[in-house]
Amino acid sequence: MDQCKRMKIINLFIGGLIAAANCCAAAQPKPSVLFIIVDDLTATISAYGWPGANTPNLDRLAARGVRFDRAYGQFSLCNPARASFLTGCYPERTKVFDLTSSFRETLPDVVTLPQHFKNAGYKTASIGKVFHVGDPKTTFDIVGRTPLVLDQKILADVKKNDASDQPRGTGKGLDYNRCYGAANRPDADFTDHQLASRAIETLAQFKDEPFFLALGFIRPHTPYVAPQWAFAAVDRLKIRLPPFYRDDGEDVSKLPPASLRPNNNVFRHEPPTREQALDAQHAYLAAVHFVDHQIGRVLAELDRLKLAGNTFIALTGDNGYQLGEHGLWAKQTLFEGGTRVPLIFAGPGIAPGVSKALVEQVDIYPTICELAAKPVPLSVQGTSLVPWIKEPAKKSRIAVFSTMIAAHTQHLGHSARNGRFRYIEWDGGKSGVHLYDLVNDPHELQNLAGQPEHLAMQRRLQGLLREHLARAAGKSAPLARETQ
Image (cartoon, rainbow, N blue to C red):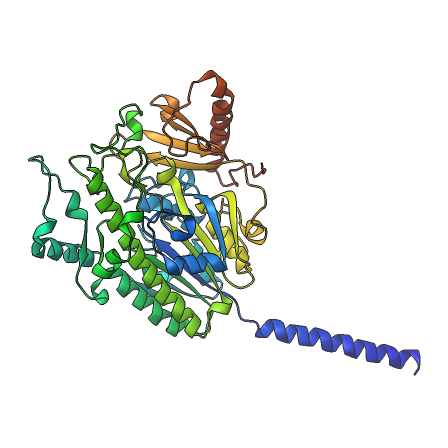
């Protein structure tokens, strides 16, 4: 065979390989995305080791993906938190610090996470509570939001029909039980069951096309309401209150007033007794168990439709949550309870793992983009977590940051947390400063601020916070991403 013929055969062979590769690439569908947001869900998941939690479906999701044990939200309140992680921008850039402002007032042209996928040709759906103050409906092909009053009506019926569930306490009108209760009602009467059913319908509609489905469950946001069977599924004997909890509530007088939050959502008039606090946490965990069951229904449908093999799943709570720590209940704090959130990624090519790296919710946007092979918009300030998904033991960044405006005083607070310490300041330090050693004092009871032996760490974290705030309001990535 002469040289010319040999070269023709080689070229034909190479051309065939290229054509075959192109055919395979064309046949490989774009990966879909299921983004699950659970309102007011802190790390109250069995996989995170929370005492008394019963979350078999979330545990299975965590077991097949990567669980981030030290993920932190940028604002412990629904609207600012969602505005932040759905735009990938810090609150200092969105300028959303309350329940009514829209990020579109400050960032009219920002491309949100679901909008980015819609622009890429994906079918998009918003089921339940996704945005708090919304993105335009044109972002989604399907929008389904069940009225929030359903569970409130169920709770009202519980109180009317159950004489044992009457308010307890003094003439001050203690209404601790206004916000939770078990109901002998069918699952289909509850908001989150209806949202899961709508998501299942949507999966069937989208099964032949790449999709981005954002699914926002309502519980365990107050009221903590669930069917009787969900309450029975929680072993009350395993529930643990914070170790310093006293029958008359924790004495928080030593904390700066800006750090305290009125317990408007749960114990409005008086601190709870120990038994009442157990009642409340039991109800919260029952609501979590019920939502876990609904998530299981959706994941089962994903499997049934044979979509799981090409769908990336991301799950988080929208903010942290206090369950009696410092005598505080609900959100809007800068403590560990108010800022820590669950964060799980699972999907094709993701090996099971647990990461102890410090990560933030603004990182969700670029992470989902990279997993789905989509470019990250320049406006996004977060950092993709794919390197940590591939290598969970990879070293952590230096610090994570959170912002808060105290609901009752309007003091502006910020927090910087590194691998061991948390630094909190209010109004630039004028209204209070905290420093906690989270290794030796995980419940944040001993404020070390101002102590000579800890001043170097206090100043270091203060400096990191100043650097972060100076950059966070701009368009550039705000964090020095060195690892420690």
